[in-house]
Each structure stands twice: as structure tokens, then as C-alpha cells.
Length: 159
Image (cartoon, one colour):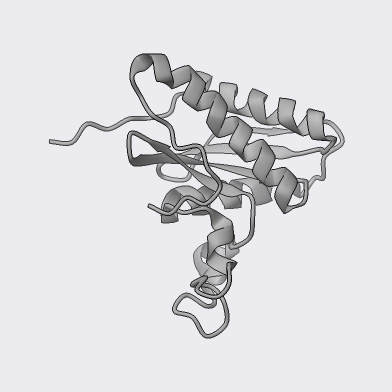
């Protein structure tokens, strides 16, 4: 039998707060979505003044990262990104009624080697979304470390 970890609302809120703090620090208005392992939102916030399209894009990125167990930008990273023209998953972004995101800003949440959810960000450029996403993962790592759990905090995640 396998032990399963599940994100709860307070953990998701810690991640959102950290992403917002980093976004404010770097001067970008973000939408942040934290999803469970099934890709459904636990927490979704749009900073005041952020684009109205941001929440859906953030959810799409988090959904993709959780469901496909990889950072979304890795789909289009040359030369072997599977969603690049000529590669095995070209066109995958049309899956799930266009909800599948293949650009920067979505990261799986990996705890003790298992993907338990995803975080998606929309509003900044790729570098800004990545900084805010890493801040969210780092906050979860800090929260869970005393409980003996290890969170993977890096941009290029592929499980």
C-alpha cells in the first residue's frame, strides 16, 4: 500500500502568499493557482490590477504541471521539447479543450518524490513567473521541512 500526501488549503495559502510577496518584490502583477493532484484548484488569487485572463491561464499551467508531472516550459524547450514541431507531442496544447499549457509558468509540486499538485502563475514574463513559482515552492518546503518532508524547489522539474 502506498502512502499519499495531499495538499490542504492552509499549505496552498502559504504558497500563494509567498508568490504574491515575490511578485510585489519584483514589481509584477500575477495570478497564482495551486491545484491538487487531479488538477483542481485549492487556491486561486489574482493580485489587484492583474490581467483578467490571468486566473484561467494560471489554472491551465498548474493543471498541466500536476497532470503531466513536469514544468510546463519543458514542453517547448529545444531541441527535445516534446511539443515542438516534429516531436512526439506536437499539438498536445489542444488537449483537454485547450487547457493544456506548454509555456513557462507551471510547476509540479513534488513532496518526498511524489507529485501532489501544481502551481501556475500568469502575469509576468517567463523569468518573473518562474521567480514567483519558485518562491511558492520554497515556502512549502520551509513549512514541511520540520515535518520531515522534502519539497523539490527548482524550475526544471520532470517526474
